[in-house]
Length: 366
Picture 1 (cartoon, rainbow, N blue to C red):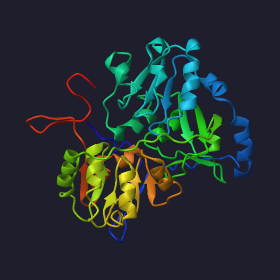
Picture 2 (cartoon, one colour):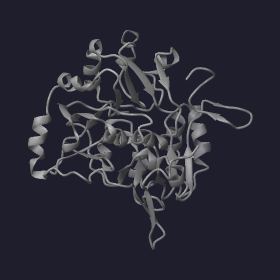
Picture 3 (cartoon, helix red, strand yellow):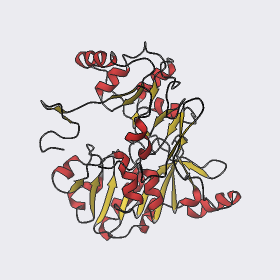
Picture 4 (cartoon, rainbow, N blue to C red):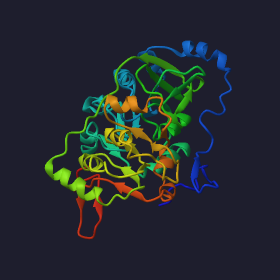
């Protein structure tokens, strides 16, 4: 399968120092023609209730929902409340928080979930045939949206309040949301006062939003349990393979977390990963993660989303050392391969005798 490098307008420039800096094609902040002095009036005109905003959804629409801790729960609740007037609406998303009420059996005529990642809230629906799962490289998803192989009609996002220039931030989750937002006919944003403002390709101007609702609620938290004795021992074995100066990709789960806890004596580690949690904050504060040896986005902890506790969300808030990028950059094998001492740490569900790894299913259960 092609990984989409030639399909993306991306460049890597090699500087005299030998470090590589990424330019991810046309910046999302470009092409905003609205006068910046008038964005506040535009914001006020677009401000409404969730119920009114969701009237823009029509039967047959494809809806993208912002993922992870950025899941816009008030918008989802208003969408499900509109179920009686809607038919055959496709719901597309990755890992989301909440109980995904659109997956309930009584909503099957109105909504059908198309999962890009099977979380606990959609697993039953997928396994019981009330939803679909599309196995796909995360690096390819933005292209599926922009090419309209997977069309997006409505995009539901959660963002930070706008800054002085009218730019909101996608906050703790950029991943594939930028591409979905660009293709959508309607963009409905929950502007949450508690959403962190993050840096990278994480901004969207008020002029790009169709409807706005406001909220002031804490983000959902995911605290990792303390590793068991066995997990700690596995973490020690894995950590022994990590060299000073390595660039890390860290998966989600107890083993990656246990491994991070065993890296306190390393030097000059870097991070280039789809997601990270609180364990990375510990290593940054301890001076273990410096990102000084990285060759792609040097000096930056590079990610597409974060998931953890309020401590983590406070850490990324207005922190220029953390770079949020899209999955066609961070997850792109051609980009990953250019990192110095790239080291990937992930969990697996099954490994067969030939060394093949299964990370998303056990037998017929997804």
